[in-house]
Image (cartoon, rainbow, N blue to C red; front, side, top):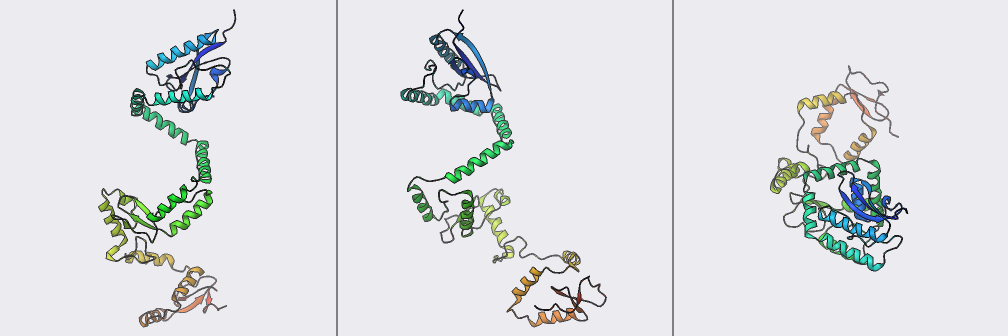
Length: 350
């Protein structure tokens, strides 16, 4: 008795056992992964179980069985990724352009079916499906190889990024008129980083109490927006007005607007006497860094001391002797312990 040449096979989701693809083939075709993109999406998400469900001596018999099985499974509500209703394949023959277009049209018609859309929507809202999708995504992102592939893909996309001829210029021109920042095309990741740093250093922050946005310094602030940036703690206050009020309060402590160099939350606040004593005890005997000494000296150059400050300095030095470590100097009282390496007098100027 001759061996059957053709067979009909089914691919099932490994997670649920539900059929998602029906095919006809011969030889090792049933084990092949050379499929359409929808097949690969299901296989990547659920895994694949393969099974031959029938063998036939003629190709036409296999085609008929394939058509009947696809119709039966779709009628039962199975979500198959077959592009056609079966019976259109041919062993060892490539599809013509007309056949490809026909399959595309059939697939588009299938995707536009209200029944299919309703079934897909119901499945996507199912808690079981959501939890399975969430678990699959977490498992995928816990794999270092997957994260590296995503990172490499984003990097390649940035390096190959380019607008259509003339289209990018129109977008950037429109963005410039609105005062927005648009990245130029065809940049490497290093060039993009340098470009962002240069553009952002020239821009200012504005907010509407909900989101923050960067704007060119010479651009007009839109109505309803103010200069500044709200924090994540201010975003959750419940309303834009509360967030803007908290931001203004943070930026203007005690009703005084902050000046350059005063953008911190301690501006306008005084240290307690207890903290000052603890800080003084911690710093006692510790020499100043040469950089700090030079920075203070540079700040004082050209600024004459007031009579009150000179009197306070003189009173503080009374009865003390000056010692130096070759870099800086300090006054010590008669009973103070002199640190090792310190000598009498001020450091010599070089």
